[in-house]
Length: 213
Image (cartoon, rainbow, N blue to C red):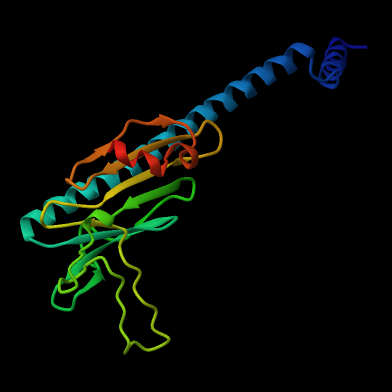
């Protein structure tokens, strides 16, 4: 047998022997590192997404306050599960109208990975004088066609007087390592954004905390 044939047989045996235990362990370590890096990256992206959405809502409320004071208008906000939008009160027709085609106050989507909770207590701003226009009442039009869907009223009211109703807007996630941000507003027009907090917003954000606003 020639020397070249011996080398070929040796190489063939080496190729057919499979992976050693050491090679398998090294491969597992590398795979573990890659998974850890991917998990850290996902976690950072998730926190960044939460922070961005919390700060956006806070900034828009502050911007709405500036608009109401500068222009003498009243703005409302309605929050649903995965979106929120803005209203302008039309004093001539005594009704709230959704704001459209505006640079700031367009409808905002909330990512499906996040959850929101809204608590409001606007009773202190309701008008008790029957002769006054109650801008907080839901629009009722007896001449509306039956198939015309009524406009849902705002839940947060930002008035040209500088007042607003007390509210708490929490946004976060409730699964692994739950976290959330909290935006609060008071009747005196004070709006605050909390730092990121650990905990389940469904349980942590309570109605009985309104006295502490």
